[in-house]
Image (cartoon, rainbow, N blue to C red; front, side):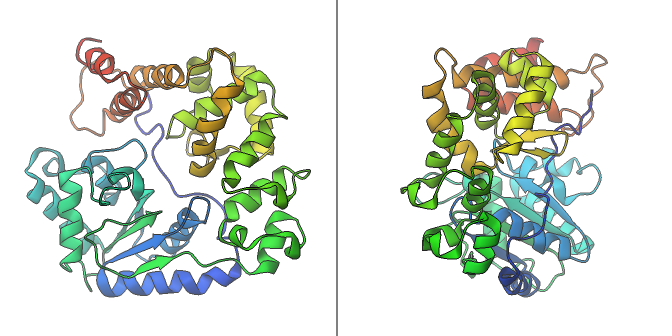
Length: 363
């Protein structure tokens, strides 16, 4: 068993466009002064890459967390500790857990990045408040200035920000036309203005050279995934859907178990999908960029007769729970049970939460 299976890390590669470097400096200034900052932008605009560029500049180091499947504050703030998180974070009352995190950030001077914060917020049109009470307390502490000038900080990145966090919201700037043209491998005058705010779309256009920007409508990622599906075989579309419904990196053998495909078939499909820039390597596995995954969940099921997205998610959940099974029953912290907890949350996302709990209790 590998307890660190699927642990989060920032996206690889440099920030898109030299024109965005001054923006990174603005975010750093917010963090140093106020102890908290928010980077906001539409899907595919580069919020994660910008947050990664900020984090790699932070002198005392950083922890990276992506809301994704998580709903509990423990899983979001765990990366603030380079080693095991203290038991107080898990066992004490919410106020003590938040104080524990704030003390860690003050004493270490580290930066905690919470990427894709939208997944931990209530969906529109309700207020963008955290699902988790502990996270709401953390937001309130940051709003009160608990980390201001302390050396430690928290950076949120996503499409929205918690509604009761009144700090400067930094919207992602558009790329310069020349930078966008280089990224998309297209003439600058062929790129509509909205695409200059979405480098994720431009990178996918480069993977689909026959598709022209004018063919993209109000949902450009849906259009791109639809165009890609016309080029993909059945097994390749099923692997894409498997990664789309599991909001966490999944290794190739886990994809095979979830989709019922032999590993050579999975690896060939991943090679094809990565060539089209629909998937990429992350940590010990593979995942879709969030915007691609959301589009694939909408588009791909209609091209796969008899393939059920929730069934893929539940079989992937079973894979993670088996990875987290400890035959010696020697877990001492929640970190030891990381893979099993990830499996349970994945099962809940796939509609099989009750079965997952039974499996953890009696399996």
